[in-house]
Image 1: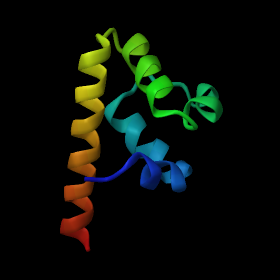
Image 2 (image 1 turned 90 degrees about the vertical axis):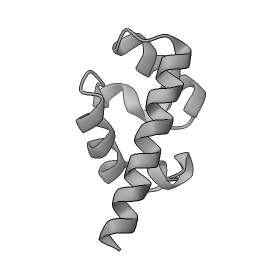
Image 3 (image 1 turned 30 degrees about the horizontal axis):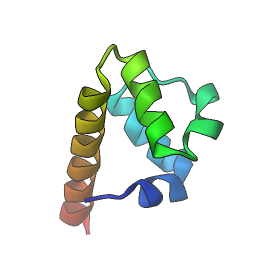
Image 4 (image 1 turned 180 degrees about the vertical axis):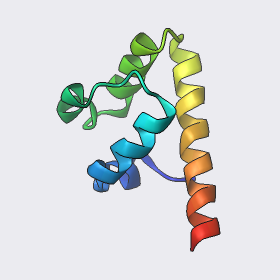
Length: 74
């Protein structure tokens, strides 16, 4: 599974991937949110009308799929 640390390490590329899965994210909000996964997940829930549990699950699924994509490419 891709980790939060891996995702935020190259945030420019990472945000493009996240935005493609979660289109309601606003890049202007990211400088502070990318520092804290819990805050990011709360923001994700709010912007996409999800519960916190749904946001956590959706984001974990996103990280898992991206890790699989990286394995297939590598």
